Image (cartoon, rainbow, N blue to C red; front, side):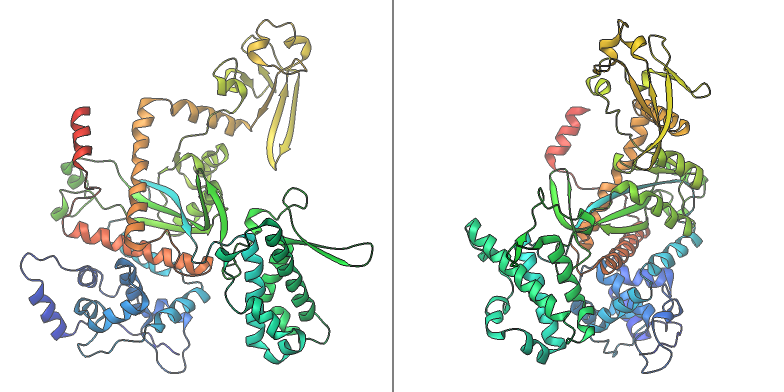
Length: 581
């Protein structure tokens, strides 16, 4: 398939006339029509040309396929429904510049388009193009305020037990080998007996009820899996069979699920791997499905899920008087009654085990690449650390507005005695002074978990006779010991914890709560909490197009003069507000 980039054709006159007739008067113009009128050729073909060849049969315009995918996400449609809308929906024909008689395309074209986009690393192209247009129109700029939060994403595969995972991995590898080399499979296994066990999908809900039977079945799966791998790696077997993805997955599942030893009699012993005695791979390496090797299990509070995690960043602004917005030139005169819409500026998708604070630096790098770094970034405590507060300000000029986790020392938790912040640190003199006025005796720089720290110790001769020792330490060594971060981070942490206790900071931090509404809107409109595809990259692509659809929906509401950040409230909620006032 080839692509020769060309400008999008103007809307067909017949289609345009029908649109004008249908949406004249007070009827609001549909999203697809308004997007074409406001942006014209939003996604140019040449931006996707690298994903397509220059020779061969001409294919459908990739720029228009990108817009179809965005409109598909805005309507939460399947590929078949989106392809049907291209054929029958006049508003889509208008947006794409199609003639009235245009037959559209087969729904499989959308799947091929997504695969090509991922293969050539163009997943974020549509978001980059839209944000660049919004910057040109004055709706986005660097500085200002943004907020970020994450939520769980459930994978598109079944949640399997360890027993089902082992059997499913053997079955998936066997299916791949039968498709690739059926004659070889006939020679290495007893096809009828294996077919009885692996001919149908592994039915987890029909697993044996007794523990002994489940253990026996698990060992059978393990023996079959090892036997299959042994046959694949035999010198007489084709070497390319070892490279089949399903065979590689089977090898990983067997390693994480079983141990294989040789008894004194020479008999091979296969048994299930136990976490306590045998150990298990770390969570970020542990497979949960033979069909999606990127999905991982994770837990957050009382929520357990198997899949991924999405981080959504968006602009936000404190409410301002309409006159101030107009005078500052923030919004067009016809929208002087409303602030600019909150727009999604970045999407990051990870497997479910990646902690939030590990993603803050990549998020800032992506925003810098787009020229949309905020001046203030509102986050929850999962993203916060002293290193990130200092590093974000130094590297990106961003002030993090985020609550820091409280001091976890015994004294701080009990709110009794002397916590770390009660000690005065003399960084130049390399010593600490306790509330009783005594000074430390040792100052020992070190590294803990790869992080630079300083361990400060007071002498037992000083602490033992001190009348305030019960408030300071209960150590059997009768001395107090402090673990300090580097000076800059220590002071930043101390200042942040002090600020977050003030009413002014609490009122300011209320702005972060709005991102929860964005997550709710993205879930309700585009279904981001449930992956449509297998694999991290395809899931990320789906999230990017969902973000673009969300931005266009918000822009459409803003163009139509709808108020922002307004949700319906129940009669009970309104009564509660009335009583509170």
